[in-house]
Image (tube, rainbow, N blue to C red):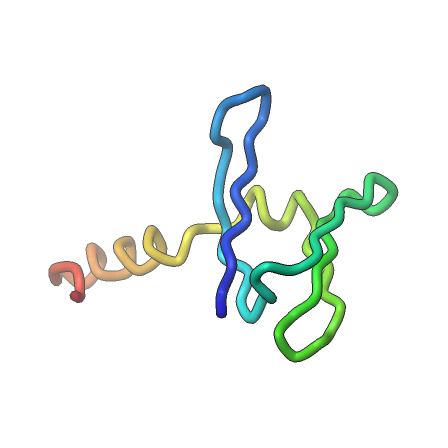
Length: 77
């Protein structure tokens, strides 16, 4: 299963990112020391996602739409 991490800043939605293979429901912790989210995957591996990487990552849908616009084709269904 893929889980989605939704981040809110000052009560406003900031961004959402899919965490591939995340365990739902599962443990999720934030480490202020490393500025990262720590969770466990469905393969029982500890995974860490840095906040800055998540914040600046491009959504997969937006990236796909951009690629398709370059090629002049419509959105795949």
